[in-house]
Image (spheres, rainbow, N blue to C red):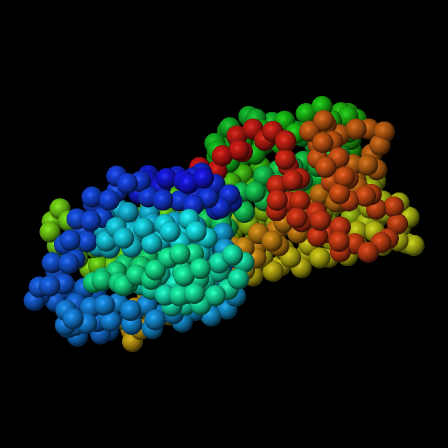
Length: 511
């Protein structure tokens, strides 16, 4: 199935579907006239005597060197090959394809000057399953994601490496296997392909979607923990949150209140409970995770704009009949969004870890057995599972340090302020994995705690979550090799299986 992309108008829902389902996108054919008009203007500039950056000149610090018309193709090919300097582990296939789709959206705005045939080449790679091998490291997010995008463009000209039919092949061989012919780049085409923020934006979007999945899981694990320690639902009263007014806080409280509605455990201690207030990790969940929700929605809007943006240089202003150099390739908006997502991920994990610590500590858990084992002493129960979550929480705290503040001059001081958006975005994958590990352990602990409250039952929605977990991970009656259980729980969080089928009011949509 092919997804049609509308330059300037494609929403995150379409892009997420493309990323998750692996569909082959293509630009609306309505974009073609604007694309061709810009390409025609570039061709005329290339044949003219006036020096136009990126069209008939060198690049960066070499922009003052004029290039003869007969050397145009060599200039563009050299640009791509010289910029293939990526290192490190390759970007995964789904994210690489998303990056390519974002490049289509940018080129499709008709301000980059590439011919329609170049767009068709990217579409053909996506349709026939030729995925360039793109190393994950090497971009500072300044003149665009130069190195990663150069590895993409290299395959288009028959260089580099690509995955095809499960094998990694030289670019020319992968094209031949797919029945495709390498293209020859014309004036400005190489620059249009490698300038841009599509690598950083794709990685940030994947991090955003993972963060949203984790946040939805945290609503459920937090509710389970609240019931496990016989916490109060009074802090979820709607008026508390509407008086403050933050949308995420209001939505979180309503969702968690609905999940806890009808719990026999909750009803059992409404009267006579000597505790006046619960610790903040229980009581302030709406204020913390709700705030994270607002941050993620803000980042989503930034990334949706960037996904539809023209971010190469120079830009072809057809209506004005000129080609103008600017700085849209600077990925600061993406870097800021990624840093915000990172802070949200860290805080969701930090408060969840404190709930785990609460449940395993007999002095705080309201009569749950030490470390949630029925035979403490002989058994250590979930003692070290909690320690593992502390390690994951600490790692995420370090990873949450901002990347955009770490500029360094590059390219002979021509690029003297850079965004560092690429690794700001890439680190989100690791942080999401860490957070899923924390939430998976919280789910294990909370379900174990709720079962210690029998014959009192939790609410029907939370009982469904308990059943989902128990179908994969048996109760901990005595010590056993726990690593596989933690891995299963983490995978259930990451895949969405743990919350599948649960209604989470006003939390379904990110945008």
